[in-house]
Structure formats: C-alpha cells, structure tokens
Length: 211
Image (tube, rainbow, N blue to C red):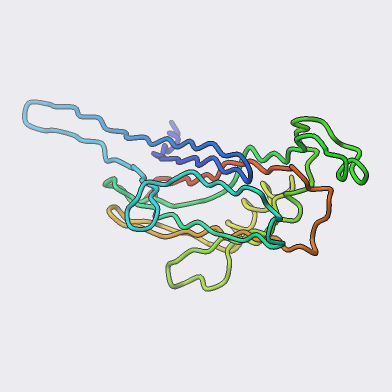
C-alpha cells in the first residue's frame, strides 16, 4: 500500500499595512512521545521564530501620510530562525492583498470615479509602490522579488520566489535574514491615490526537508 509522505510545517503570518496596520503571527510546535518497555520515540520539531534586528520581536509596520515629502521609501528586515530539531525549506509570499479607496475628497473625486469607503479593490496606491525582496545569505546579491503591490502581486511574489530563490534550506538551529524594501516617487502618482491604503499579509513558511 502506498503511503503518502507527510511533512511538518511552521508558518508565520505578518499583517502589513501602508496606512493602517494589524499584526498577526502564529507559531506551531509538533512533539509526540511514545514509550515502550525500554525505548522512547520522540518526534522531531520544526519551529520558526521571526525577529527584527538585534533579536527584537517583529513589530507592526506602519507608513502614514504618504506623499508629504514627495518620495516614500523604507524597508524591513526579518531574522528567520529555525529553533526546531529538523531542517526546513523556507518560502515567502504575500496574501490577503487589498487596495482600498477609503473615499474621495474633492481633488481626488475630480480624477477618480471609484470613491467607495473602504472601496476594497478600488484603490490605486498599490500600483505605484515598488517592492523588492532580498535574501541576506551571500548567494543572492540581486533581488529575489521585484513587484508592485497591485492585485497581481500575490502571484508575482509566489512565482518569482520559486524562480529566483531556488531551494532555501535552514538547518536546525540556523537562521537567515530576509529584507523587504518599498518605495514610490512623486512622478508616479497624482490625486487619484489620496487616502488610499494597501493592506496585505507577509507569510513565511518553513517546511520540513525530507531526507
């Protein structure tokens, strides 16, 4: 009888908002012990920690009042630690991406007819935000992902990670830094993005490596 191989996973979800932010993360630990007369069998663990620089807990990301200086840019670096006893393969992506309109003031209403509040999917801001993802492992000097934050970004993140990162394994006790950079410039937007917001979840998935 064919038996399907099962793997252990640990997934972190980081809620990311440009304008209004929520933060969510989950962490799983899988352990089981069974004892016979003379033997103990312990299932290995796959457990992931996502931390900011210097070992600080990953914090909420919030970017407000976009456009006040004409250019907005920034970044976030996460330290991904495999604190379990099994090696794991890391992937990263985004989910639950929403470009919200949040209503229109008078200048925006002159150039934008979609003015619902929150107006999910109607916002134009994500299309003018450029993002890049870097892996700080010495083997990937170029960005792994280059994408805007329009609705197509969810698929672009998944496709580009698998195409450009290759297999990224983190051994038991090992760690890796992943950086997300974002920017937009004044010439890329006008009044149509006023009050718009972009909300999405950054997801790190560590899956057991089968040997």
